[in-house]
Length: 521
Image 1 (tube, helix red, strand yellow):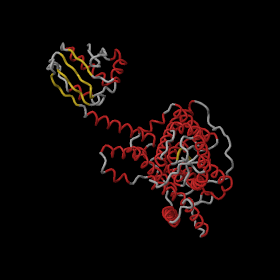
Image 2 (spheres, one colour):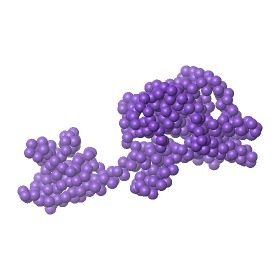
Image 3 (cartoon, helix red, strand yellow):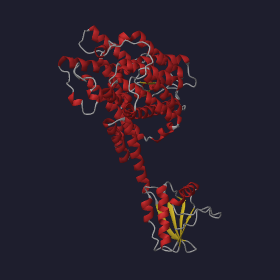
């Protein structure tokens, strides 16, 4: 994705310069994501500062940048709209606690279970959601909910759209912002193109006195140092019922996006981060952010790539980015209020274009139909519900497809040996998906009195497999025939022993064949 030459030793100079570059690019995105979540821009900036600083110091992946993200913002908007920003702060605190628990329980390793089609659907769905969220900016200012209405499912049709010259100016400025971000890197990479685009569009708006909305029209940014503040919510069970579902979803999304970003940075830098350590750091950061008036956050794929591509490898790069962002809040808050909303919309549209995996259209025709279905399903569920549910659904469907495909791969071949015994050789795993096909291969009434099932090329994978063996044993015992199991793996024998009375089997270690032998009805 990015052509870089990672150095072996992190350079302090490179870290500082790359951190400054990231900080400049963080400002517009943090403000824009705050609008997506339906909170004041300063809430997004505080989150970008605090989450970025704490994860840079404590995280498991030096060089990775964290802050306020669109993946979390699109979930927060419903909570803010229904219950207010104080409930959001309480949710972020609980979200952080859940993430710390996930890291302590070593759950970070489970990110390896996310199949690639699920990852593609994840990013595509995220891109679509962020795009739909931006349409709210085209509503008529001053109407109730003009900024947030389109973030809620089905409400996009209720927005009164701006018309006439105001619409044309807005579209023109959005297009100009996107053009600068797209074309400027072809000439120079000295400054982030998104920052340059915002400066140019802002200068054009004020130089030509164009009539268009700016950040200050929506909210005033008078920033100081973030102050400690316990969320003003009732500390009772009813509050927990409200915030807990959101906290679980936000914690899941935050960890998924952070761990996926960690994997990507690992591949680019040819080093290895620590997933569980990153989970704990994300949790501490979000807990602190919620107590200091921030909207929470997680790892940012785009900003992390900017940092790595600019030479940032060590923790100093993330620390520099966070501290520079705080400096912008303290010194340059009045300037942020003058940023045209059109510039932020353009930045977010570029984020959408960069996030969406356009290659997935080509991949759909080349991958198995089951993978294509998973990709489309995850994208649709992401838009309809949220990212965490979409990833879980994708993983479950992928697992079921895998089980169905392997269920068809079990093979049972029958022969008669020199002792007159009927011998069945089983090939393939015996699990819940294959037990039906397995049982259909045997006919106790036609077999010889002594029957052997050879598991040298098979294994019993779950309780369904154990039950299938027990069922088969009862069938042979009922017709007065003896059944033996040979060449069971050690794992299978452990399963049989652990099952105990659940499966009527005596497991005997045969010193000659190293088998589990003699099934008793």
